[in-house]
Amino acid sequence: FFLYNCCFFLRFIGQCDSGPGLRKTLRKAEYAEMETRLYAWFSRQRSRHVPISYEILSAKARQFYTETYGNDNFRASRGWICNFRKRHSLRSLKVCGEKLSNDQSAVNPFLTTFKEKVRQLNLVATQIYNADESALYWKMLPEKTLVRSQEKTAPGRKISKERVTFLACCNADGSHKLKMLVIGKAKNPRAFKNADIPVEYKSSANAWMTTKNFIDWFHQSFIPQVRRHLRSHNLPEKALLIIDNASSHGTVKELTSEDGRFTTLFLPPNCTAVLQPMDQNAIRLTKLFYRKSLLAHILSSNENSIVTLLKTLNLKDAVCLLCNAWEKVSSEVLQKCWNKIMSDNDEDIEYDAEDLIPLSELRRNLLSLDGDMEGK
Image 1 (cartoon, rainbow, N blue to C red):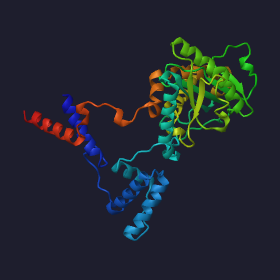
Image 2: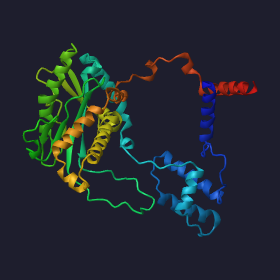
Image 3: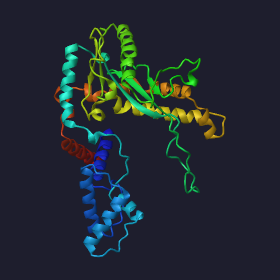
């Protein structure tokens, strides 16, 4: 039964490569020659990672129609574009991240430097840390919503611009998540009065990270927390912190302990989206869990007006929700965030003999086995 399902899956892959997938009935394109040219152009642009919108695709379809058939009677309506998408199995994705802006040539030299640094300091994964900050609009509601069929629009509210910056830090084996640092505009928020908040709080004029705040965090928070963690695991009290090269992070000299046992390594410019562990999934999931907690907090309230409820939400509530969101990020997820940096080269990986069978041969064997099963 397992082999039969594998065979079905391979057939599915073979059909998906051509475009329409498993669809048995597909209406033939009315302007097949123009559509062939359009899809070939679309494929070339996407191979170069050029973003293509409805408007761009529609304009290009009208251009190819005029060039192919010698008139401009074709509108390339939104309905035609939708049918074109179905015929060629196109889907819409949000452009995210900065991966295409990264300098790939700097990745391997950094990995060599990093591994040499780890060997030089004789560190294990527990002693290697990464920290990164991100902005959070802590009162912002989702931009999308489900609506009833009768609703033609989804009117919104004025977007709250109240923002904080939070710093997330953990080690390479996911065993130690440091207490989160939150930076706001207010030096002494009224919501914190007589309250024991679960995060460390600093302030700056625009709620961004500053050099002073980061250096203070490194010496007064990072080193003491890491010392306690390493002591509890009977490991040498030394560690390496990997950070990006933002100007607000200071210098290596400023971010090295007096005894030299705690130091930093800066990521190369334009490589954070590829190499920065906290950027791989940790910060995204923290924000996702925060949004879910915020909505749950709103729905659980007896207050009927969302506007009134958001006004009563204060910074103390926000940092508590943010701390809970950070706690929900599992150690397994955090460990996977380090795969780009911590994984060895491919030649160092050991494979089973069955893993080395070429896919074409495996597919041929499964298809022949499927034929034998049908014959029986």
